[in-house]
Amino acid sequence: MALIDARTARVLTTVLIFTLALGFLYVARETLMAFLFAIFFAYLVDPAISRVQHWTRSRGAAIAVIYLLIVVVLVTVFFFVGPRIVHQAEKLSATLPALLDQVSSGNIAVTIGTEHGWSAATIRETQAILASHRRELLAITQRAGLRVAEVAKSSWLIILVPILAAFFLKDGREFSEVGLSLVQTRPQREFLEGVRADLNQMLAHFIRAQLTLAALTLVVYTAFLGIMRVPYAAVLGTAGGMMEFIPVVGPLVGAIVIIGVSVLMSYPHWIALIVFLGLWRLAEDYVASPRIMGKSMELHPLAALFGVLAGGEIAGVLGVYLSIPVMASLRIVARRWRLYAEKKRFGPLNEYSFGTEVNRQS
Image (cartoon, rainbow, N blue to C red; front, side, top):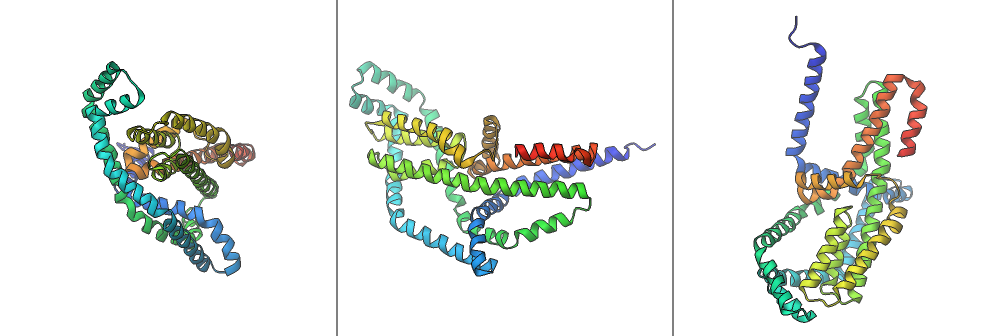
């Protein structure tokens, strides 16, 4: 009698292969992040390339035209707006260490308290609280500095991602057809085709919608902060727009950064900023986002929060940015797998009703 039957051996082999695959993905996560960003960039520009292709009759020429237009737009924007943002960022980075030292030592309480007419007792109590948490404040500052350095370290993606995306844009369909050709059974092929179709629709819509929301937030933040004469308005508005790419957590972090810098710079109307940020959050969550994003993601806030935290632990800042589409992709795979398992169990007669449910939910 065999010690391990065939079914147990298959299960153990599957678990081993799955574990090795996860280990490989974790080790190669930085390279994987570059390819994922390239795929998202390809989804972003593919509609424009498809339109230009009708005129050029060549996929390669259409890609070249769109890439050239992107370079022209970026150079134009950087020429007019870039110097101002860079100048403000340099001034803020030079001023921030001294301001953070004032916070950790508690001296900021004296400055703010004097400007706003606090009592001497309130100033002393606030100063004592900040001084007693000096170590924690310094630790938070160091972690924030490491995150900024991590983003700067990943700047090479700006060059690599468009190059990789060009290959996906030109030969992406052939890549997917080769993957489908490796599957021999009809149910498995239908499962993969369904996953591919759902992922194409979800990612294309999500990337464009998220970029639209981020650009809208950037313009509104920058305009309002500039009108209110908030220090470093261009830098803070740009940071708020970039944070919009991270659902749930990003807008909160962006608001904290804007309010924090304003308070540190002794900006007098920081309460008006809090009111504005709260009103804009309500307007975007209940007006702009439902119209632009729709129901393509359908992620519970807890699932989104888990994805953001897990993405940050696995791949840092890049993992945070990719967490939501990855979680939505896993949701699509799970739904399609339910359909596949249902068809295997009950046969093709159940395909219509169950498939209709999945498509309606998608």
